[in-house]
Amino acid sequence: MTGWQTLFYKEVLRFWKVGFQTVAAPVITALLYLMIFGHVLEGHVKVYDRIEYTAFLVPGLVMMSVLQNAFANSSSSLIQSKIMGNLVFVLLTPLSHWAWFLAYVGSSVARGLAVGTGVLVVTSFFVRPEFTYPLWILLFALLGAGMLGALGLIAGLWAEKFDQMAAFQNFIIMPMTFLSGVFYSIHSLPGFWQQVSHLNPFFYMIDGFRYGFFGQSDVSPWISLTIVGSAFLVVSAVAVRLLRIGYKIRS
Image 1 (tube, one colour):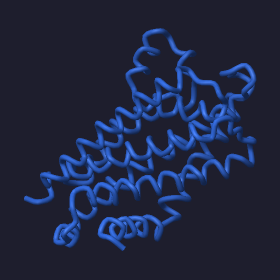
Image 2 (spheres, one colour; image 1 turned 90 degrees about the horizontal axis):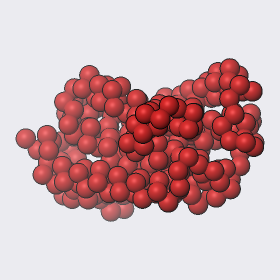
Image 3 (tube, helix red, strand yellow; image 1 turned 60 degrees about the vertical axis):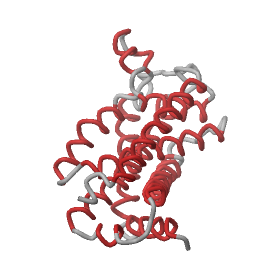
Image 4 (cartoon, rainbow, N blue to C red; image 1 turned 180 degrees about the vertical axis):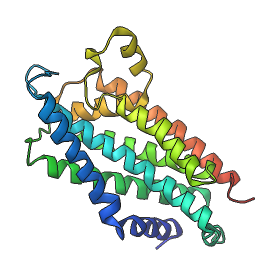
């Protein structure tokens, strides 16, 4: 195995050995969201003409789980290694900044897709899923997980203690995720809040992902792909730059 593959393998083992906490628990949380929101709002909310609310909710919950867990994987790994002091053993290796990026972001994508697949499988017992455009589903899942994995890398490099990481997740990641159209279509919002939603890149991830299931979305999937792809490149470039200069890890 090459250097980045070894680090990638180590990061995958890190979350897989506590799979009940890192994979099963988020799946159960998403299932609870489905049961509660679906029970309360089914029959009261109609998003698209032919799609029931519970069916509409499933892709949003899947993508939300992918994004949150991809971010949590890289960010928690770095902050734990920095605080416990074992990051020095990785720093002693002749791994390039690209190897770090590929390993940490790759393992984040792996965890995000594992959780998302689990959510999709469990929710399929309640709602029969549609797969109108499977390639769109896969593309947005990979881009979304990759972007949040890179963002988690940036947060992990920046944070110096757990409460800083918690603040990053609670005041940035969680609000942007919940206000991205997971539980509603933005067309149901007043005009001002629709415009605000269009400034949230998470909205385009979930809307494009949902398009792959139903062939319907709030904006064109090509617009979503352009915005999500651009955001992924920008965040990745920042993460690679911070790794190259050793931001807060080589001092």
